[in-house]
Image (cartoon, rainbow, N blue to C red):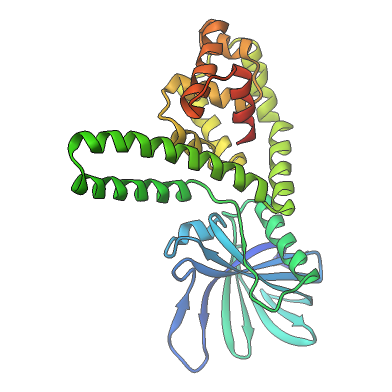
Length: 333
């Protein structure tokens, strides 16, 4: 939905985040996100909006909540509204029959006055469109099956969960240093690392199996959009032609992977400290590049690429496995 604003189109559609709140009887201004918490307002079409709370899984991390990463979504519901543009940036916003003054500050900021309280909302430019749809679907799903208790939906996390596990492991190692001799500590450390890898593998499997169908569908859509994109088609054409990839190319690929497959790189390095070559092989496998083309791009023999993949499987799973089994594992992350 859009309206004319001083000769230009102003779009209200999309996601907005609560930036600040001011009460009429107080000079205090409450700013958001506050300790990793804010409200999210999603306008859709000409008459419907969705409202929820975004709460960071790591209190104080406002940057993550602004991008809707590592957050819990607490749905509040949806409602109908009427948007009447009066000109000069002034509007009337009617929700369930109650009119709220709405003012367009600029293309990214609006204020809504409710019962005298002035709420300032900013356009959620850091939240990807796919994540906005995911949040909206969570709110819709909750409305169809509401619960008496507060509902909380955790969106897929990225690297922070594994980082927290790494800090825990470090703490355990320090305790062991105080309790054991140097030799005993070294042996136990090896054992614990092995168990840690096994636990993380199990966690990855459980996380994948326990993802809500809604989340799986949204992640699948993001992957399909990427595999059908012009960027991916151009990259595959270059790889098929045997063109070497520059550092700039690899940096760009890394950024694409972060948006399409959150946490992929961190999960890999948490399982095994990989060399640059090993990581590049895994990235190309994830991008559906066949082994023969991987060998050409990395200037290696096909047999060398095959050995790298089977060797990685043995290091991670502590048992022999084929190169194809490693490929299947990488594609499942």
